[in-house]
Image (cartoon, rainbow, N blue to C red; front, side, top):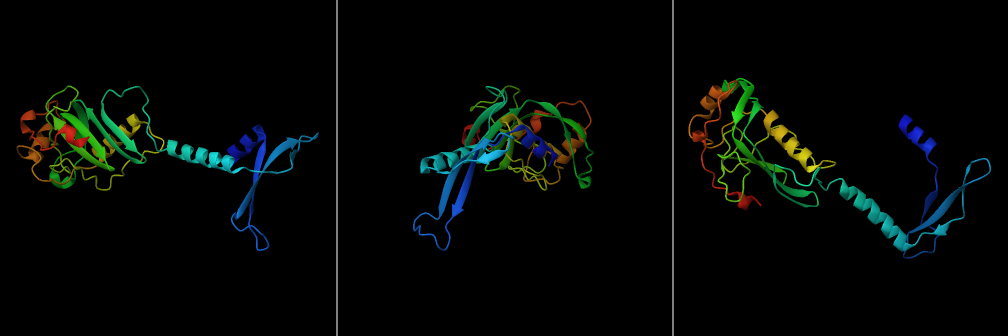
Length: 242
């Protein structure tokens, strides 16, 4: 409330809209509302005075409504902080629905596991990851190359718990990011965070060529590179995700 008071002390009102609603004695049959526009002037003592009202034209009302709607839409339309995000592969948006595909080069990630798996929390090397967000759902794939994926790059199943053979990720209680007020780069990071901060718990299908629990027991808290021989080919191609 203090901030609002400070702002009002710095700003001067210039115009006012007064909306009249149709009453029982009103004779209007088609228009239930009447809107007047008033200029606000200052008298000699600096007090605001409401000038005589004038009808607000329909075109002005339409423009005012359009400006409000456009302002709201701007909160849900994603923008990029830079001309091209280096790791962005594809982006498309219609209203609040969007498809976002990006990749992450081989890295070391902190991973969390449920106690029943017998795998300690810690950091481990992971291969190149392709993230796909579509219809507010996350899919994860991997590649064997370190370079930026193209349409011809072969995709492999994600070697993680909670991830199905088609790449769909079960985030459990993880809260999916919203797009309001975010840049594309911030949204990508938010999805990465919700994936890596969610505890790995369940095995869906056959994610790797071997025992996934044993694999991560061997890799966690070591400097070993991820052994690409464990990766299994995916039936999904990158151009199918576009």
